[in-house]
Length: 195
Image (tube, rainbow, N blue to C red):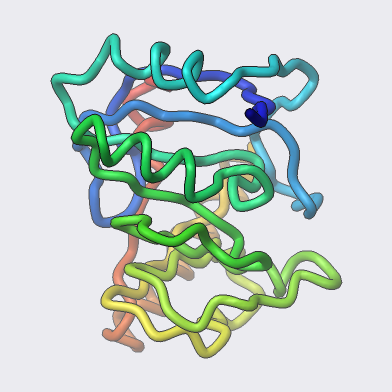
């Protein structure tokens, strides 16, 4: 039986995208194939977990019924065995991916956040997703990478600089108003100071 490198597992509210505000168990996989300049995830620590250990860890919050596989880049590790086991226990399974690797079969909701505007060799292989969520820096034209999705979202990039963030937010609002296929999503978990 394989193991998974896990950065953390925690219960919170989904902070971004279509499911903003929904209670969720987050399984954050350690490691990523990209090095995005704005990444806010600390991968300095991880632990190896077997599938039974991972399932036991998420069961504590089974009442919410919603699990989000995130990272890092979860497609490097999340496999059909994990998805099938979560489904067998009644979980709705979502994944947040940069789209550079195929997604395991059976995922219920796929959020693809392409990073090709920010990182070399971040070619997207996904052709469809439930939603496309593009980090918007106010400089690059949003690129959906030809992905067919039900929703297209722009998320203002958090640079850590209040003045720069205000400029990016204004540019994002202007862009969405001019391109109504897109909707804006915020990192609400940061705004209300939760994980």
